[in-house]
Length: 333
Image 1 (tube, rainbow, N blue to C red):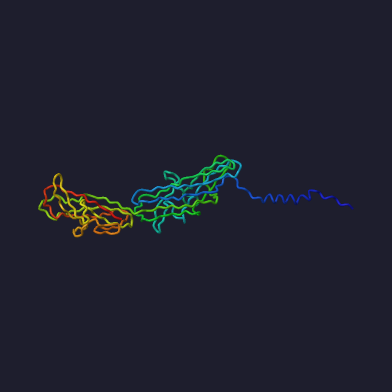
Image 2: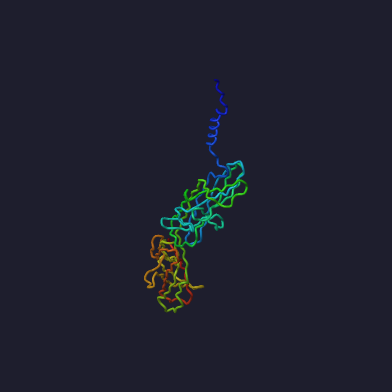
């Protein structure tokens, strides 16, 4: 008995199944816009005067994004900045040990819109709308605007930093086909980061103001030991040691000055500057940045500190006139 011939399709079936399996195992390529890199320059505020107004600085974000599809795609690419270790974000804090300096990061030059991150509890990330034709790429930048707040007079001088690592930054892409980008950020994070460091150096500072003039009054020529007092106001940064010296116009470093008359009057009235109401401790100008000398020491706390000044003229036996002198107040720190 002769056997029937095998149907050709029966022999081809295993080959077709294998081909289908091989095609199914080929890697899929992501379509649409993706971003391959992002970086942020460090934000350095430089020297910050704690006694003056706010300090501004900027940094630059750079990124590269590509359309992997042959069709036009649009995306809202969002750059997220959280806060290290879940610290507070409004205001943000730079640290110098246990000391803090308040600052904030903004999206706009007016410094009104905080640059934050979805999922970190802070406000919105920085959105950038991108439209790319098929297989096209783009490189772009965005400015980060920083501000150290004014009015932080109690901040202690030192070097402050806030370090943003990979876990504190992220990029998300909300992609659609077409020429109109979405209007909201999402959490489709693409696995690239832009770590950076924020830094500032709070410097030691002092200012001095004088109140009313030290007036010995109107006295008779027979008067002796004529005394008076006034005060100076010194404001120094918190914990900053300072030493105040007084220097009469004759440059006598022991605080022994002379008051001059008016017009053609060549007479001068000697006087002595003192630190105390008892007029026993002279006040001169040998103070330095590290030693009081014959001046007055103090330690700043960020607010004005009033320091009394005393003077005495041993005798008023001089021609009648108005006698004056100018004393320079030197604050060493």
